[in-house]
Image 1: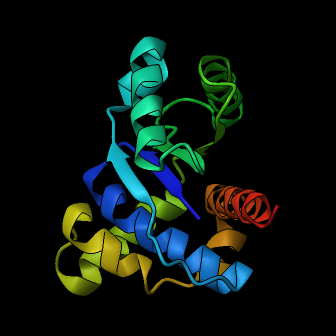
Image 2: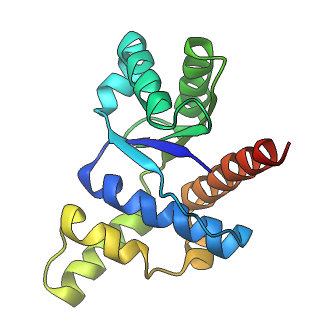
Length: 171
């Protein structure tokens, strides 16, 4: 199963590998022999520059040798995920209708901000670049899905892409 994930932050670049592995193992009962390829791309490029985004989609596709799927994972920031998500998905589908691509926007939720503050208080510090990957291996996946729509959407989209690819590999 080949998956390429495009993210916007340094912390997400390392952490998303563990998230995909957990979704595969815990939700699908799969053992991934190959972790997803990750690529960090500036949010502005993903949202405002379709021609450059098309180039990154090609690079992501090259990394999985045209035999897999691509996930774009970025923060919604001040945008409404229900508006920007479908718009960005339509853009990437128009750019590359030949690729299996999903888009997930993480909503700016107070719960997430509170969690970062709690981690800082409990551990004395928190750096997404240093801590996000290790914390991704430890958090309660079911609780995150129950409490944050964007966490649930991330898991569902990863499941869909892995299932599609597994189905294609069987045929």
